[in-house]
Structures are given as C-alpha cells and as structure tokens.
Image (cartoon, rainbow, N blue to C red; front, side, top):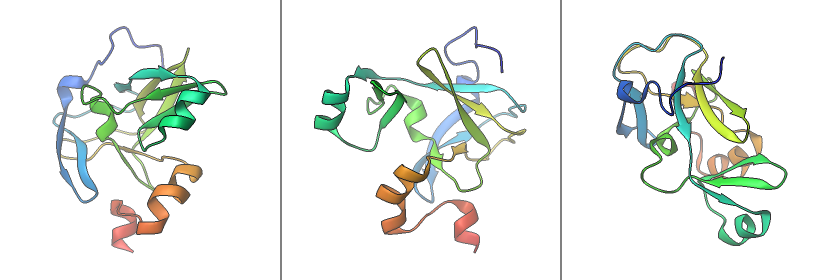
Length: 136
C-alpha cells in the first residue's frame, strides 16, 4: 500500500451500523483489495498516560506512543475484531491505517484481528462474537 493522499479515502464508503458484536463499521460501496479505508486516530498518550487511562480504544504504535481512539469522531473505533478479518493494520510514521486484505462488498462488516493480547484480555473471557466464530 502506498501512503494515502487523503486522511480517509474510503470514508464515504463506510457506515456505522449494528453488528453481532455491538456497533460495527460496514461497507456501503465495493472496496478494492489493498485499499486504504480509514485512519484510526485520537489523542497521543505517553506510556504513563496510557497506563493511567487504560481502556479498550488504546492503540500502541511504538514502544513509547499510544493513540487513544475513544473520541466519537474516530469512526475507525467501530471496526470490530475478527479471527478471519478482511482488513489489516498498517502503521506508517506513527499513524494507523486500516487497509483491505481483499475486495469488500457492500454490506460486509469491516474487520481486523485485534491481536493476541487484546483478544486474551477483552474478548476471550466473554467469547468471541466474530462471524467466523459464531458459525462454529
């Protein structure tokens, strides 16, 4: 993926709607493979601030930099976890981009793998609600 020219190239191609895991982000138009969909953004926290704040919307971008994505303006916060995601994360110069791994069709939920640490702490205790796990 090349560095995006605009902050949120496909922002007009996604919409927040109800999903099986609460609220989720869904495609409203076809999104091609390897497309930048949306940026995860928010206040930049130091390690001390991150540890004091805690929470589910913290995204570590380096050993000493974390993004607090809890603000409502951060539409990317609605992208849910999936064990078989259709997107992945690209961190470029401390910025977090959500990029499609394959073509995403209208109506599909935008998902990425939150990673083992987040999964074990927040998802596993209540059971994974991603589409692939609910099918099993």
